[in-house]
Length: 562
Image 1: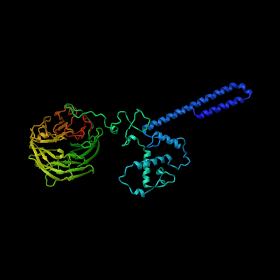
Image 2: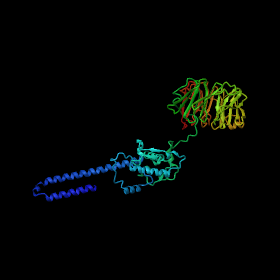
Image 3: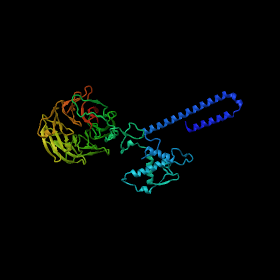
Image 4: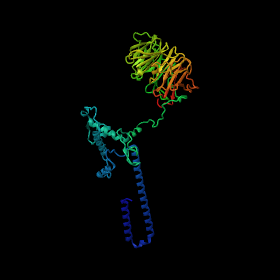
């Protein structure tokens, strides 16, 4: 019970005693009524004590709720105090009496900045001057500029005094920063310079703090785990097992805009989110791949060139578009501009439909007439050199980050070219091949695969092949018609082999064992006539373009990233 209630009770008791001594003799007969009155007073006092106790409980509960809200969401009900602990705050409050008194500001409605706001602004200014790093550039006009903060309603909150109006530009910037910090109170754990503190207790009553559990005080970078949404535990799935391939069919990549003709090219951008699809309907389409919606981003119509092949530059800045024409197109993704290149000076090629882009994005190699290979600079789009095979050139592949070029063609031989000297450094017969039709190299450059018109695909170790070994590691005989397309995935554990001449003629080969996955292609769903294929940079997606104008999209579950 409070002091006030005790004083009231004592005064009431004194008054009742005085009444008892001074009351006349004729009132003695009414003692029963007096006893009833005293019992009512006792009941009233009990109700009053119960009410005061209830109010105290509600006040304690309100303070506890505020403390929990501050702990979870930051200091919502008290201004930010930097550099002070709880004892110093208590001393300050007791010293200046701010905890015992308050000022009624309702008399003057024009005053918009209160004393606590002024103190917060002054502290913010001081801390900015002490903690702020040296600016890289300072605007000299800030000192010359003056801002009137009294005429604009939304700037009046920046005043420190009621009659203040003009301030300098530098002061205006400082007050805006202080106001922003006041309205957007940060939490300690969100600061990059936050350092965890050692704490021996399992629980803490301090707000807006994160403490390190016992035994982990000196573990470096423990808080970095909280700054990413990646999985904390990732299963080791580096090796792909042969036999069955885990995959699932997703929404078609071009479901929002199917092609009206066969798809001749599909390729993922280096960011694994953008996919291009091009075909004989003369349209180049871009889709954002997420496996659920696959939103169409853009479509470009090439009026005079049915597209036989389209390919990103490895740096992702341009797309090279070619067809059965003596010129080709270049689409700049940054400027969204299409440029027509050619015919090439001094050349009489009527078709530039077969080409490859070097991994360093510096060179584009086109298959020309009569065994010629044309080297084009990707920057200037001009002819920088030619290479000459003995037979006709049919397919190309780069190696060693664009420093070497492999070619395959009508004489059944595989050529290795050094692009620095423009010389042939090695030439050997592809075993059992009469007419080479397809060629590709693995991303790490250890393997290369060569396909022929008989359906045989030979896989070689490139170093052994250059050393004189002619025997392939494996001769894959899963196709019975001409091999038109070969592609390794990102880690060279899967080799896709494809033929245009037969339905569902697409096989996926497990490279370490060189055996075909038995559950591919899907038995109950036809791939139609597959024409092209690409794996996403992380290996998680596989896109297959077919002659029906669809781009089939599959998820490979072995890979965690697209």
